Length: 84
Length: 171
Image (cartoon, rainbow over all chains, first blue to last red; front, side, top):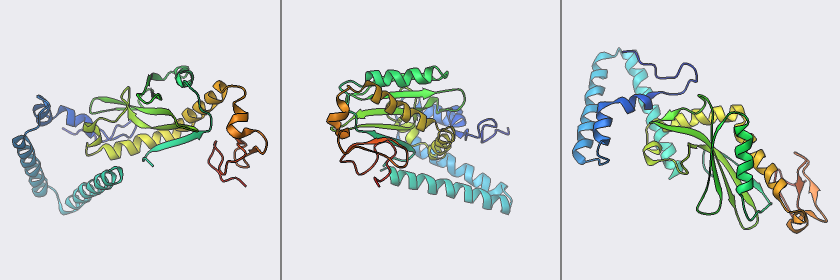
């Protein structure tokens, strides 16, 4: 399924809307309690998806995906540090 | 200073900020905004403004331009920034969401482009002036020695080194 990352009308990022629909998110948030096992399970799911991407992407797309993930991580880290 | 936030400081201090909050709410309601105004525990007011698809929902919570008005000892501070409609603080789940920094930047860009923050803060300052008691300008230092800002034309109290309207340094 080709889901757009950005709202075509506003240009706003839409990933949060997909997060709400993720079975993993719904399951973990269902009881308002986040356990260590749930975190470990989610980390394993992320690793699994990244390994699938690693194998499926061409070198060019992999470079782009690596940059995008790293830039997002940089933004998240600097915003968190600035607002602490 | 908080990120993605505009601020205006007025030397006018009112005992009750409710009339100002009502003025701001009415100003934006006339333009078709969804508005919610609520008092804060510190005696200030928090006003949520949202309209159309400018403020998308994030993780199911509607975003908004948040205008907060707080009274200090000698002045009133108005802040305008992106937040969640009807909620005074951004919920932790959103603040910690990995793409929230991207979204808040995008939303703030739209607010700045529409100059919505400037309009809201100007509305607060205008309302503060309208509700200030008549002799206020004397007691607030607007008497002898008062001047007008060379940048924006706003009136400056005699002892002011910076314009209370636009923040420019007194010449």
